[in-house]
Image (tube, rainbow, N blue to C red):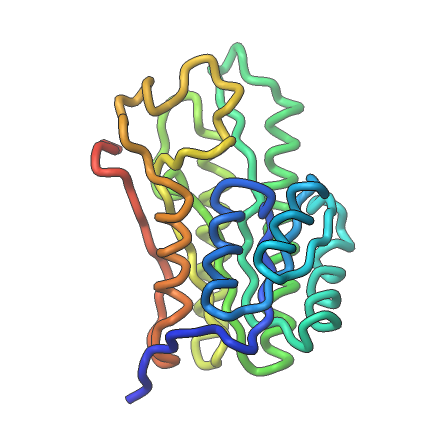
Amino acid sequence: MDTADTTLAGQGAIVTGASSGIGEAIARELAALGAKVLVTARRQERLTALAREVGGYALAADITEPQIPEQLVATACREFGRCDVVVNDAGIIEVGTIEAIDIERVCRMVRINVEAAFRVAYTAVRHFRSQGTGHLVNVSSVMGTKVRPTAGAYSATKYAVEALSEALRMELAKSDVQVTCVEPGLVSTELHRDWPVHPSEGMDIPHPLQPIDVARCVRFALTQPRHVRIPRLMVLPGEHVI
């Protein structure tokens, strides 16, 4: 029986949405496991500092640009010699009542959370198939399994990621290419920084998850024996009633 891998030494990894929050924490966790990490997001200064810290490579980019996913894989292969892990983390949130929600901002969210996420996912698994191995991690949300009033559009984007993840997993089931969907509950990140009432107050969750909590879940999925698959992994704060 295969034993668990305790390191990712020699592997190349890509993390999108890595300039803060969950993506930043995942990049650090992968580097701690020995992977060479390409970090990407729009904020060059933050990315450069993170890449310097983890000994990786920074590529500032707008993930909604159609050519970026291919560029990320090509850059990882050039800089690290290979690409074995892709963490699809970039995302934003837009919520609001029927009367108040901004449709243009919702459509921008769809471009990032769905269109760009799909491009990254398909680019990653095509590359993994060509080399015979690899692991795609899609960062979804508990809201990809449930809905609540005012958040239907956001939930829909995460449901889309869940559906794609499961279909890809099934298509790749007989191969050594893996797909994992991580589903966090409320996490303390910059995602809600502009909200008038932070959801930790609005939903009475005084101890939300920290980004490192999600990063450890990603680590768990990536370090299982080769015959083990972790298709979905939900992680919630203890007070999160949903």
